[in-house]
View 1 (spheres, rainbow, N blue to C red):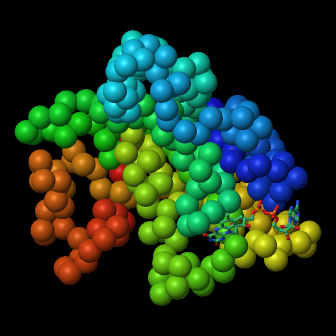
View 2 (cartoon, rainbow, N blue to C red):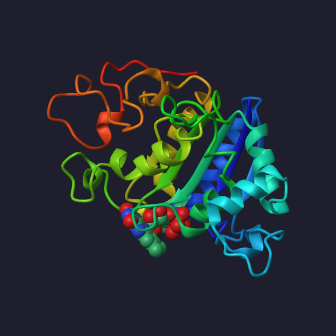
View 3 (cartoon, rainbow, N blue to C red):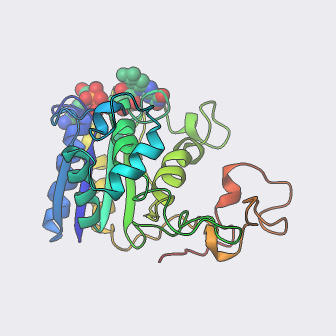
Length: 267
Ligand code: FAD
């Protein structure tokens, strides 16, 4: 497989840096081709602004989604964004690696998503009508490819358990896994999360590294999270409500959008 690893940590000698090297080494040992986007090292520009749309007239109001659409259609996205899109189209699998900062990804990585997941590429794809609400959540430009997160967190695993004070890790990562990765079509694998990392030392690394190597060895075979597909009949269009007979009675929230029959829906 071809694998793109997008790495968002400012320090190569960090724990994240060590885990990145473990992942890359194992992927290469398995015969995969690997490319890396090292966002801090590359000086990635994280904010969306006028500089992203050089063809926009100086006096024209900047409407980010509209400008993104036009730039994608006319192939006038900036070179840094075009290079990332080329990598995403090249890769069979995408890995996003980051330390959890304020219960989410570092701003530089969010900015990578904001700029690279352009209108017409990652959203605004396909027919939008009374009967179809675009190609997303199971369909889209990146359908058939795999994606997963590698995340380190200072908090304990119990703090992220179903009754833990931070909220369940699957809920916290849902906006990334479902909203960012599943939306444009990726089959999203369960995340690799390392907890309580601030107390980490040399003796702690090897067991975690081995778990990570195993995830890299099974990157092409691990079943994806069985999110419901928008265009497979589970939702009313255009209200986008899950049909009332689906999901556990009384259930609300993110878990509703994961099939509870356990069936994977890989495309
Ligand atoms: P490092 O700081 O590089 O290392 C962590 C530990 O591992 C250190 O003890 C270090 O000595 C050791 N280590 C480093 N490299 C190696 C190696 N090669 N071998 C063995 N040991 C090594 N946590 C949460 O749970 N939730 C949050 O919302 C959250 N928000 C945060 C917000 C901010 C702004 C910051 C700075 C931190 C936050 N944290 C949070 C904690 C954060 O998730 C961790 O600090 C981070 O994941 C640690 O990863 P690192 O790569 O920076 O580790």
